[in-house]
Length: 319
Image 1: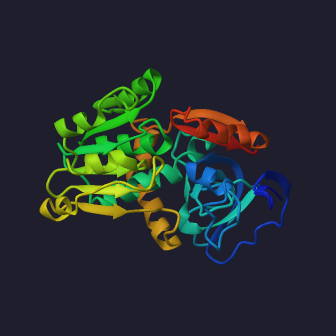
Image 2: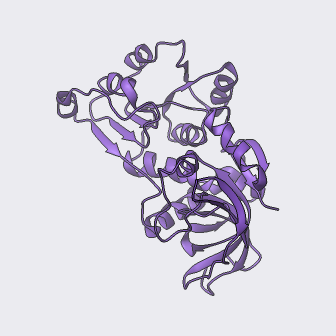
């Protein structure tokens, strides 16, 4: 098969590699589409390798057709599926633990389905499991609301009845996140984000930005708040008054999806299928596709994310 590997200089190279050999309990997929995630950009830059038991090239979520499957697997040969993977999605075939492979939501295309597993597992993991869920009336805060993760967490937070505060960097993105259900939309270049947080103290925050603003907003959380860090795009250092943590009983939670065990990921994917697939099929949840590129144009696809041009997901196609 062929895959878009990273060569010794971390340049993309479409070349022939050995076909994956399906182990017991795995499903072999013919990949038709793979979505692009910011983790792929980090891997391309040499600072976020695949876990050791996965192919050492980019790609965290795929869709395609089942080529081989265990006799007791939920999916069968010929089924259209999507899958969460630990790496190696930019390839013509991939072998994946069966629990991480599920039928695509009814009515969705393979391109749409490829854009779901990584960001919606991230949303479910952090809002449902790490934060312990939210009750109607709670306040949820996330920056970068028009990103792939933002697309998912805003909608998931709204299904739980939360008031959503988010940031964007253009009028077009502002309109987009309002359609997703965001209640307070701030342009971080011109609006006073801290003032908005003081006026709407969060109960849960999902932070992919970090930086100086994180510490300033953290102290405004309500008693018992949960601040979840998943990335530090604006910098890894900030100032936090530690008295705030224990006086308000705030939980500062570090979270990643990629490093979790296959067993954990299987449970999350199965929860998505059981709880959210009917909402996708009814179009009550969406995975907005910003752009689609053939795999040969992977650099252009990465460029969209690097320049933060996307509203939603960028997808690569193989067929």
